[in-house]
Image (cartoon, rainbow, N blue to C red):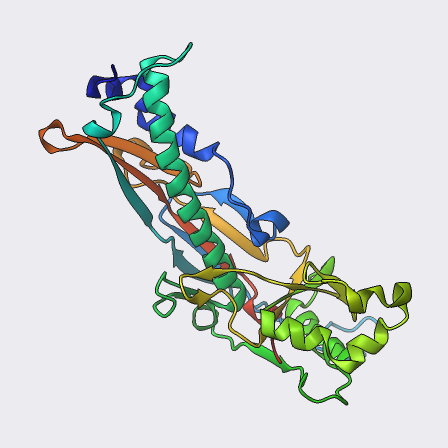
Amino acid sequence: MPSLDIFNDDAFSMVSLTKAINTGDHLPQRLAELGLFSEEGITTTSAMIEQKGETLSLVPAGTRGAPADNTSGDKAKLIPFPTVHLPQRSTVLADSIQNLRSFGSETEVETVQTVVNKRLEKLRRNIDATIEYHRMGAIKGQVLDADGTSVLLDLYTAFGVSQQTQAMALATTTTKVRDLIVKAKRKAEDALGAQMYRGMRAFCSADFFDAFVSHPAVEAAYDRWMNGEFLRADVRSGFYHGGVFWEEYRGTVGAVPFIASGDAYLVPEGVPDLFVTNYAPADYEETVNTIGLPYYAKQEQMRMGKGREIEAQSNPLCLNTRPRAIIKLTA
């Protein structure tokens, strides 16, 4: 019969538990699936971003052999961004493993470890959903806490820039939707400057997507495509129009949607280091000054030997290094 002494086994050390939670089944999420954010561990609890406003100017004609005009360099500014501490706790009570029996070839350690791994999986799913929420917040320019109102990070304030928007006027039947798409793309391209991009994707709320798909200009563009299949099919998974891939984004935290009703966000893809997720090390003695991992897990004995407390945590920083390159679209 399993006993609490089992938790002194190496299978329940911080290293083993951390390995288990990092190799667990991943919660499918759209931004994670797309690989939009590059991931990297850091050894500190904050990351420094260098902001250097490169300015362009026309070069006047000069006389051959004469000295060229002097061009001054832009000064770089370092901006610190603290990581967000996301801890969670669960308990494995002594009573919950009291009647467990080893089965078949399983040992007592393997049986109890199954119980612990189920708890770790639940904690990881919560962390995954939160990181997805933070990533969407970085795309929108504001990373919010779980309540949907408290601001953890305002990228527009941090970089000293303002958000770019484009009204799509989808309620007006005569709107030239393609022209407005091109206008929004030009705003994003101007914000990217010399940075090249692979393509553009629009993450849409349900209301925006429905209004976009049903607009006469969009319907007319696909009226004869594949014998009108577009008008009959469920295209929420996405389609191209105006050189942009449009898709409905599903995601909520409680009653708070990841994207507000009637909004969408135009996002350039394939831009190096545009979207970054850094992971800081956990606040444990064993992890000081080590390279951060996406997840950590640890356990300790409860008072009076009543069971074990399991803690899982992540310390992410989700950044959008060029927030003006993301265009907010309104229906």
